[in-house]
Image (tube, rainbow, N blue to C red; front, side, top):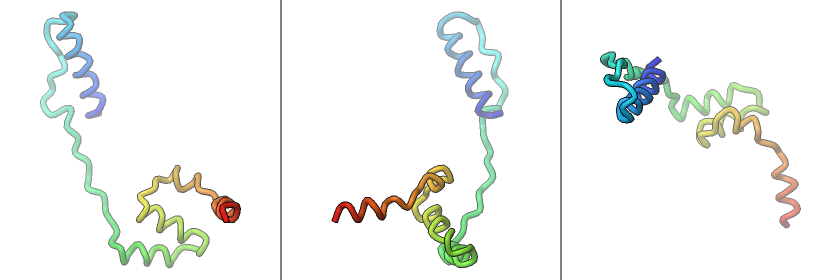
Length: 90
């Protein structure tokens, strides 16, 4: 809601500057302020504990997501083809 309010306020401010309207009606106090909750963060030890608990084929996924700061889409797009590229480079 806060993002929508900021966008509407910006659009109406542009209309105000262009003399299309006399006053910006979007003036709700603190309506454009976001108050996100703090996200929990794992310690390094907890990350390694988590990686040890998942099946071996997913350990690299957990470690790359954490230490490589990769998003899910980036992780899902990774392929093992790098080994064939590596062999061709030799």
